[in-house]
Figure 1 (cartoon, rainbow, N blue to C red):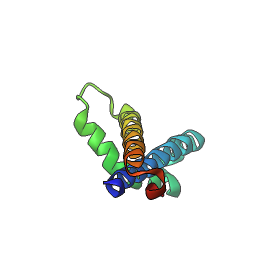
Figure 2 (figure 1 turned 45 degrees about the vertical axis):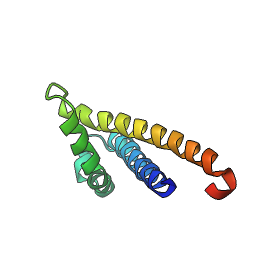
Figure 3 (figure 1 turned 120 degrees about the vertical axis):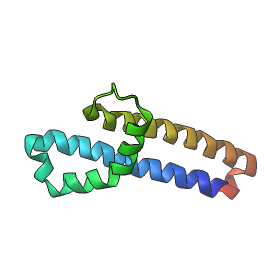
Figure 4 (figure 1 turned 90 degrees about the horizontal axis):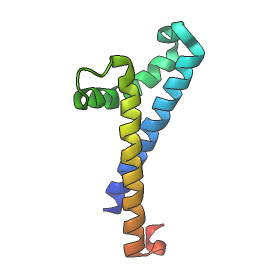
Length: 98
């Protein structure tokens, strides 16, 4: 169970950092961000999470806001997986958790 929770936490961390990097690079690159190789690479990495957020959100939410929704949802996943990991580590003992 610890491995599953740690894996979910790791995937959420990677996706959160990729979304944050994509947002920051989008601000820096401006209108030419679609021609930036690294922006497109981060876009490919985050596409499954953004699609999942689009599927969960109603159509009234604008497409440009969906990455923010994905970021917030992944943030909640990260918080809950962190709390679950702490709970599991306290149950089995901190030494066994390392």
